[in-house]
Image 1 (tube, rainbow, N blue to C red):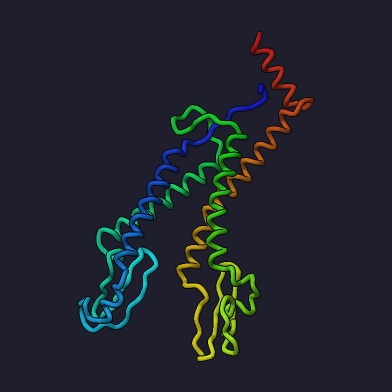
Image 2 (cartoon, rainbow, N blue to C red):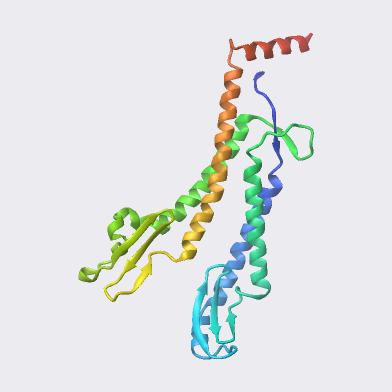
Length: 251
């Protein structure tokens, strides 16, 4: 294919490897932290966990996963909340975010060849790579959205009563939003509660960022490939100039 041009692309293999290692470490670390949460709240409520002062309340922490027992003069948490495990989980999260964001943003550019950080590639290959990244990150976002917001599509006005037989005691939906998927429910007792915990909405918003970055890279790669195909189409001035250059170089 004589008209296929070679362009520069940043080396991102190390970044993707770092993102994969960080993700695997996060999965293992969160699993250990979740195991440490088992029955930790019951031990606090039964006085088996001692803290500074009287126990005020017990709450669940989203990240790092931990059960936190709040006492009058301080908190006591399970393994994931403090110590080495908590620090490693935060370190893994930072490494994952940095590697993922830098790798996705690097796909936006076409640097000049000649640097050790740049490798030759074609625009067709780059479109396939960015398209794969967009498919994966978009699928993760859609999966999280479906899990968190499926009840909104059964009818926003009755989202709080979806999925259960409440009879005459069905909770009312006071307010709702599709992004992030959230609703405020009021029960017959007067208690109001959110459909999803706040950490679920935060996780969903965070998962939209890689999908957006990958989508921008995919669109840019498609636009560049389309422009290149127009330029190299037979009969165009750019294609005739390229053929003339090839003829002169052959001589």
